[in-house]
Image (cartoon, rainbow, N blue to C red; front, side):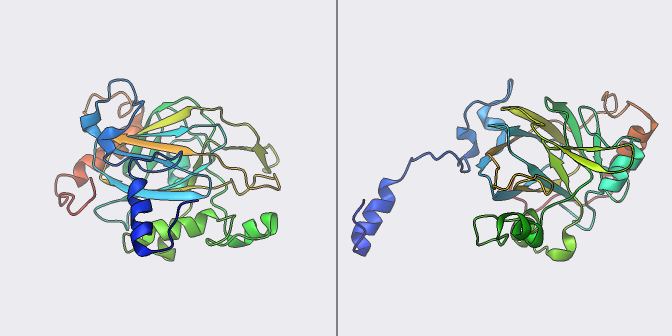
Length: 283
C-alpha cells in the first residue's frame, strides 16, 4: 500500500497515477480513444467514455454528430434521455416516438422524437434491436424493494437519481426528468397487455449508433432495468463514443422513409431557419 501519511507523500502518490487506464473512465483527450468505428479518425472524436454499472454521464453534441453506445459485456442497460441543447424545454417524448411511427419496438431507421414534433436523434445502426420504450427508469423505492437500498450514495443507485445528478450540471432538475428509453433491454407486451421482461436481450459488443438531428444534450444512466427480477445488482460497462459528422441532407434515406419521417425532419429544418446557434457547449 502506498505511503500517503504526509501531504508530500500523498502528492507523490497521486502524480504517480498519471497515465493509469481503468476499465471505466473518460478518455481525455477524446482524440486518444482506441478501437474506433470504421472510418472514424481520432481528430473527429468528440467524446469517449466507458460508464460502469451504476454510473452515469451526460454531454452536449452538435447537430450531425454520431453517437455509438456499445454494450461491452452484454449486460448494460442504457437508460437514456435527450434534450434540445439550445432550448431544453424541448425533450424526448417517448409516447410520440411510438405513436407517430406506429411502432413501439425501436431499431435501425427509427427516430427519437421530441414533444414538438421534431427529430432529436435517428438510429443509424443497431446490432441489438431489443430496446424498451414502455417501462421508464428505476427509482429509490424500486431499488430499495429489490436490493435493500436504492440511494445514490449506496451500492445500488437508481436511474432517476442518476439522471438528477447528470442534469444538475446544466441547471436542470427533477421536473425535467421525463419517461426515458432503455437501450439493450427488451420488454415484450403480451396480447393481454401485460409486460414480460426478456432476459439476455443483448450480447457482448452489441451497439446502437445514433445521429444528432439537432444540438443535443444526452443523459445516460447505466443501471439495471426496473423490471430485471434478479436479486443482485447486475449491470456491466457501457461505452459511449461520439464523433463529428455531416448534417442530414434532403436525400437521406431515413428522412425519406415515410410521410411521418419527412414531416419530422421538415420541422427540424424549419426550426434551424431561425434557431440561435449553439453556444457555450462542451463540444
